[in-house]
Amino acid sequence: MKFSIIGTGFIFPSHVEAIRYVGGKIRDVVNTARGEDKWREMIKNTDAECIVILTPNDLHFPMVMAAAEAKKIVLCEKPLTIKSKDAETLATKPNIFTILQLHHHPLVKELKEKITTNHNYEIKMDISVYRDENYFKSWKGMKERSGGVLFNLGIHYFELLSFLFGKPKELSLSTLDEKTGTGIIKGENYRCDFRISVGEKRENQRRVFKINGIDYNLSSKDNLSYENLHHYVYEDLLKGIGITPGEAVESIKIIERLIDSKPI
Image (cartoon, rainbow, N blue to C red; front, side, top):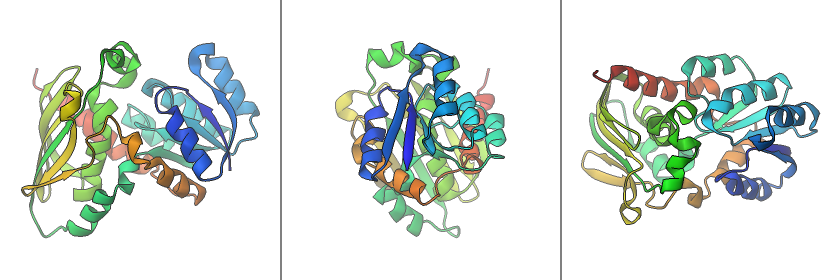
């Protein structure tokens, strides 16, 4: 498969490596520094079958729409959008996939087999990572562009919670600022107390789901790209499968509901 990439930021090398891993060919690479015309021109003219979108979160929706309307396969980094209504619009289009690579994590596969609907679960979700000052000076530190810490970091883990334990019924947000969000999510047979933070010291990083007293640490590294899970995402893509907008919308709605629930 031939690929064209929009976006050359932090996650770009992981995608280049994964494309090469599956034997793909990169036809074009553009970024947004040269303006909207360049990426729109590339989508219109490329002979690549797949457009990969690695840009700031607020640009995902228009870029995915443009690529879908050009009849391309689309692979977009998380979050697919920062508005659920935009994700629902994308759900009407074929061949759109988003990257929530933790589905391929060995611990997640193990948990998916263990968790059942006839047990109750007490969950402590502690996702605490280090981010330097450059992170906050970039678009990721701009809520209007990124959606804030719950979208930048939390989207992986709220989606995972829903994937493993089912849709939430009750949600409440206790605290939220530029670095940390805390709250409670309850489902049919679970309660999850969560902490999502980008204010941790580097040496103390963790991505832990404590389930009925047992710790499952998904990673203590700087970011998930070290786990090479993107390889599996691209292998799926070549088979025509992946996480669709219809599947991704639930995690976006979780964040919207949490933000709406915050006491004034």
